[in-house]
Image (cartoon, rainbow over all chains, first blue to last red; front, top):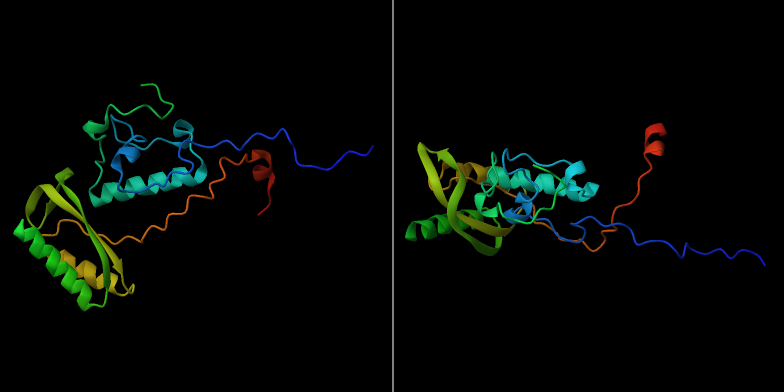
Length: 92
Length: 106
């Protein structure tokens, strides 16, 4: 018997980040504020958010855009979004 | 409120003059600004947000930014490319081998 060439049948589905499939918009400030520190307002890095390349880039661009256009505060997190569920891997 | 209507009318007319096709005008509500913006010798705390769907030649952008800059009632202006949403190809996290990246030649 010769070994049959086939694709790995035990392959796991590719790991998806939490935003895989969600369209990132500069207008939904709530989503963007979840990736911002509530104390300083700085954007969390890739090692904290755990997003893939594209999505992290999109999020940073959208956050900067929202901050410039006056949708999102810069130096802090919008207080009405402080009680959002924790997405990022951070311990305060 | 009639003032905001007048401002919108003025901007849309100016856009139509330069040959822009207005597809849609959305009102994103009036809320307090995230930070106090000082514009035209006044410190603003509340503002109305409006979104205009446009189709226009790119040469309009600079003239319109000028025009909106001179308008006292407009606090902040901006042109953004229309987002074409296509997130059906998201293939998840592709495992990247860092060794290859490090030893790769340019």
